[in-house]
Length: 376
Ligand SMILES: Cc1ncc(COP(=O)(O)O)c(C=O)c1O
Image (cartoon, rainbow, N blue to C red; front, top):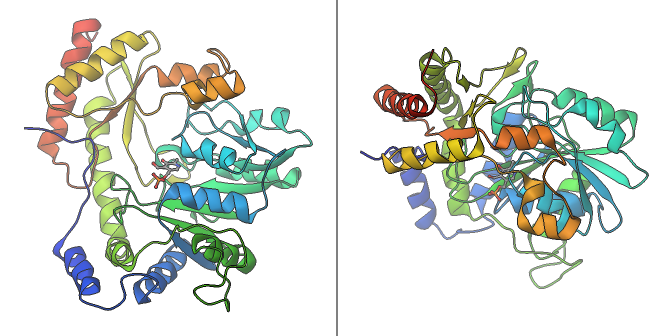
């Protein structure tokens, strides 16, 4: 029996909603787009929401709308999915990395100020794996230095810090809806902001630079086709309407893992930090510091060989070949990120994972750990 790394949670309601759009005349730029954007803005608590075809396009449009470009620097984390850095490079600006806090795996706010220069325009923090810890401190530093905050909330739909929802901290924020996310539209993303001008700019940029009154063949600026179809939006509307149920299911799966693994001294098991509501994007355990990269990789291979899908979320962004080539980074530049990256194991994690499957995953993981370092 294969246990997948992630799986979408699609009910008959989603299927019916998608079929209803297919029977309608509006497959794109129709009523479902408006409905999805309005429901999403209401859920997060921002004035505006602009749907796009991926989280990456959303981040890229934020950079453009905020006027970030060549000569500018944007501070971000090297422990994230690649788009958090590439969206900065797509507009010709330079990503400046700051190492992470080993407890939260998010950018270490204490280390940000030393990286601020007169070229710094913005900070792009990420709520890694759905953990919002420290986002408030990042915003305080940004405010002190008059910097913009673009919140990469792609992994954190439904998370909150002291009751304040993720996605409301930055001047602009972005969520993503790839099928491994808390909710999915197949592919998709959402930009959020309270600023009408920024939202209107994103609406134009996602739709070939068309203006409000310019018609289908009038183009006010260089734009893109980053539209999200009504088919995707219909799926997103139903998924969003189930968000509380979805988050509860994820919380339950996380709890099973914690109950079965937390006592094992060979592992660092994620827990919900104080003051945080975590929406659990993935469940990533870390091997204790004494384990090597080779040992971690062997465990990944052994588990895959037993039909349990696992992954190494994330390799360090600054050590990706094209980043090394472009910016000359080398091993040791961000030691905390590198030491965390060498020991992570993302375990199977999704809404409908059963307790029995979690038992099998944990048993197999422990058996493989025993081969290297028996439990004491
Ligand atoms: C932190 C982060 N940023 C950006 C993205 C990009 O989203 P997408 O894959 O929809 O382009 C992801 C997606 O995995 C992500 O995890």
